[in-house]
Image 1 (cartoon, rainbow, N blue to C red):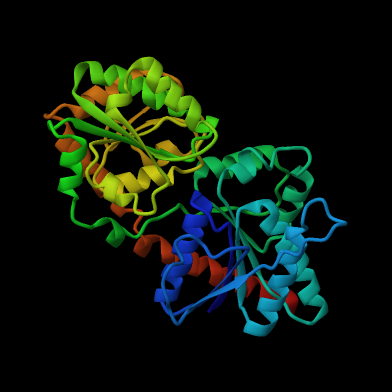
Image 2 (cartoon, rainbow, N blue to C red; image 1 turned 135 degrees about the horizontal axis):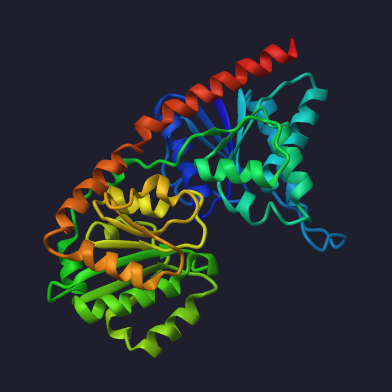
Length: 379
């Protein structure tokens, strides 16, 4: 198959999953064409089956904001026509699904039928999509897609609850390439951070309010009173300054490090003892899956799709949003020398279920089904 993938080229979950999916498809012999405004972060190597097409966004005095959606639709038309694509797979509803609809109509006028698969990732539905400014376009674009997938049952349910969707939605969960996480543990790094064999807690996110990074710091503050421990915070975003102030107020700066954005996050996760993700909302929790792939148990909220991944009492624990006391008690339970090895083992076993080798065939089957349906309807 020749597949076009449209995504955001950033560190965010949707961009990471889209890029890793494209790389996995290319390994299986499919020809994959990425269409976006910048080379995706993880598309950092050469492959004979991978191609990148940059969306050129012109700036004109007439426009206060450059019309990216129009430029994207035009680029999609160009790539489909001249590369002979079999299918377009767009990740994140806004603006990719609406741009794909526009491209599809233009191509139809040229006698070309191109099936469009839209994958919903989370905030495109639960946050941005519900905004009255975008809701009609999101609803229309999803309904006009030839196939729709969501990364969790919770996101599928939320989509049906908040939008008038006529299409069926197939759940295909996020995934990881376990081979990437099988690197040797950086024991020298662990010794540098935890010279006295302290427990190491880790959180990664984009530091937005919905991630509740303050809960991570508050839980660490309580855990540290009982168990000698260190905290690593990976990522950056609008809440970082506030979180640094909170560490100073609590007096935990000596044992807390802000590492900023890291590409090789697995090097940090490989030496961690506990991963915290107390988010107010998560459609899936890809960061938690990456931690589990490094044999790290997860302490999470029970919001959104996280409980579908983090099995309470098995791979870690899930507590109510904002329950600092409950999170602290569960953290101490996991970190005890008696319990930690079992949680680590079960976390890795769960992560193996989401290896790309298990999930990729589901996407391939969905593509085939969508192409066949589109061809039958066009006859």
